[in-house]
Length: 187
Image (cartoon, rainbow, N blue to C red; front, side, top):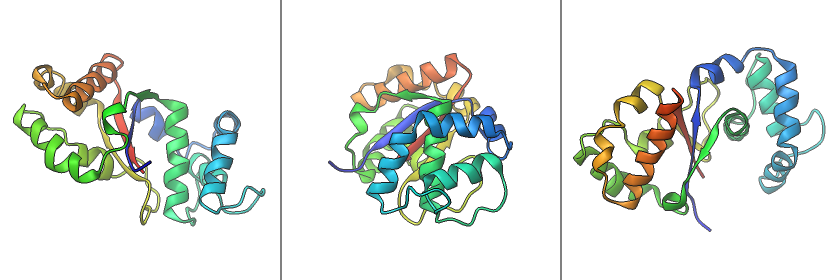
């Protein structure tokens, strides 16, 4: 199957406000909507689905409700991804799944730079989350482009030629039309 990029158009300011808000109603809505996906992730990664045990459910609780973040960074990474899925809109990733990270840096980012864009795919997947939590040692890799960066790069990508760059141009069009940024995951 391989690794790839999953990108979401998200109101990053609202997402940052949600994390640490203590909004238990939202926490329950997120966990309820994605319960089976969260359970599957816990099962695949050997984490527990038992109440009170460290898991993606616990990570979501810590991220939304605030407090100490003492779990493995990967749990927070996957928990954050669930919150982003709840808050954002998935963007077509067909040219990027599967896709080796080296292709993103050595080919796609070179094309983006040649078009005059200031965004880089490597930043979208390895630039870090806009919310603080322990970084995953491995996967998922996380990064983001702010709404301002997205808006500033719409025009340079209008001349995109490759499928990859045209796909990114589509991401920027959709995100900027809604005043949103883009958050990416790689796993």
